[in-house]
Length: 281
Image (cartoon, rainbow, N blue to C red; front, side):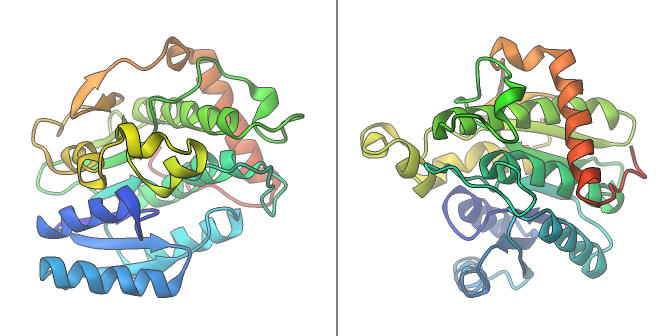
């Protein structure tokens, strides 16, 4: 039985992904910010799928301290993780700082993913000549250009700009990590789930969701495909949409910016007094 951890999985695409993978017989680990909501989600998934192999973790990704505790708790309770789906994401209209003084959209959508993933890689152990899989949810809304001046403490906050930059960061992280893990039998891919009628879409693009968006079931298809498909078994370092590899915007191929972001991410972790687990990289 394969074990999958899905961040941000108490509603929206993350929850639907959890349901679909539970139906496929995965041991599904749920994550959310509310213990009550996590328990409710577990009960709903169990009732829908008859799968009792479910567990949950309650942590807020706006805090690097909580991200560290999250990764440590996963490693304490589970010795192996077959699939990690970094699904959690926010759109924030108002300028918000994390406890570490980092702009919250960047922290939740990207830096928490970076920190959590690197700390969980030691338990991502491929089995039966198969690959372990890391799947990062990005967006077609990723930025046309990288703007390092507007990542950590933007001089003038714009919710759309922050969101778009964070999703470009996710693609950079995916491409760079796939290179670092290319000899480890761990694949790393990212995806655009589609324009999905979720609370995130409604927060950032009011009125748009009802007119043009898909439902969460359609939104989870590509994520589930990357988690289970034999076709995707050995594909790594790619950006997907509608279960197909597609090309992101030209900015995503800026190798210098990609490597600069990695260095910056490490510095932000270290500056706040935390270590990175990098034994498998």
